[in-house]
Image (cartoon, rainbow, N blue to C red; front, side, top):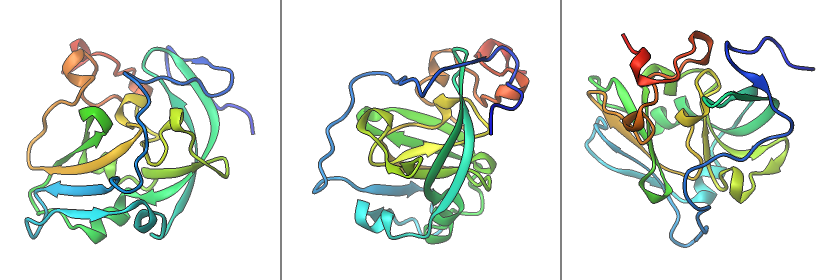
Length: 192
């Protein structure tokens, strides 16, 4: 297929670079779950084991990945559960405007609800037909193709429904609150 146009300031990376903050977590299947909590319609917390997540209907998305530090890697095929599927199973309250994606070690990334429900946003279990590797986010990685990579945490553990925005891990440390690579939204000083 070959790379299409790159967002401003990006350069083509070879392969699939590994980038994350902190150590790669150990996977404990007996203790692992994915939770949806916060402003759900019912006020309940929803929870799925990995087997239950894997049994949900899946989608395939082919995308490039853009890191805010500059590299873009191309032609990734991800398979997993659409963000919209999670909203059907765990409906948000009508006043929900944002979600916080929570990952291992308390890592977080905030997204507008419209980013999480984009037709191409998914919680991936597979990459190019293979189960994700540990360093690339096994067992579950959020992929938000239209935003920089820091908006798609590896080792995803929860989605919190929020009725107001608040910043996640990198957003609190000077990265842009929205993170659109096509408009070069890298750093918080660029916010309106």
